[in-house]
Image 1 (tube, rainbow, N blue to C red):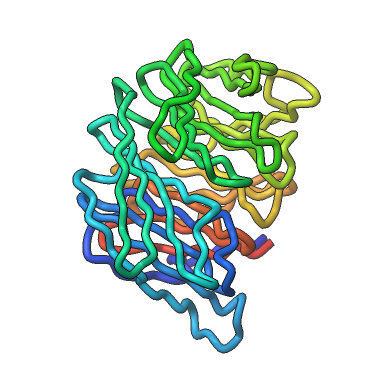
Image 2 (cartoon, rainbow, N blue to C red):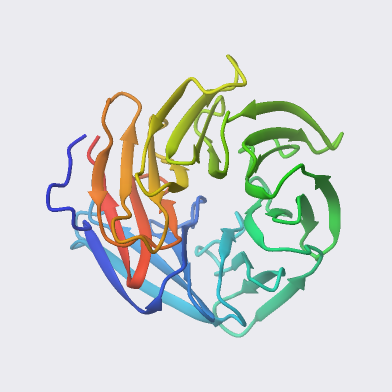
Length: 325
């Protein structure tokens, strides 16, 4: 893996407003292009991306906006449904969270049919949400109200897991629909059996606040997180304490995301708004992280489904960084 010494994005796409959240769909669109959504103050834009690394006839990135959706408030979190497809009849479904403590489930055929279902129940800020990845019929969300809630697509709250501190991150097992990982701010990560609605395993950061955690879905014995200024990695078959722990960001770390293309590759960001905030790419086989972005970091960070490429939101732009492994 080589550092990008210029520290400029591999590709940049202009946007009309500040981007707070950006998410590649982790699921196939049924076409060569990947689905991507980004959200700002009162909107969500759905687009497709195709990169020259995927198609030699593409020059850089082929970025096509499919539709912009009005959103009543600023988008704070967003998750894609595995039902979203562009082959056959186009069908888009994603869910958002906003500061009014509500989830909004948006479904569209990108033409005439467009539905928004509002889900209410959380009593404080919603930090993260995720779709059940095999069928997409359930959504899990975590909140500062010390709960993880599981919803169906009609907006019914089917399961409520009581937490001991604010819920920060939630991840669903890629194949076993009854296994859920929930990370809490006080530094505990628990795995739940949704059938029994009980914790079956827990991990301990040994420090707080835990700001972000992610389950390595290409190798589910690996879990990563950032707490304070450190990144931490667990092998859940070995210990409840991290196997590796290293400093990441001087200004405290904010996000941790595993690459979907390589189980040893992950990214961390510093806190948004700091002048020296950075995007860092880490490889477990390399002792030092590679600094590939030094611009002010926004709230979004997402990895491409098959490429070692991540995207960040920012001020009127999306920045894509390709990593050489």
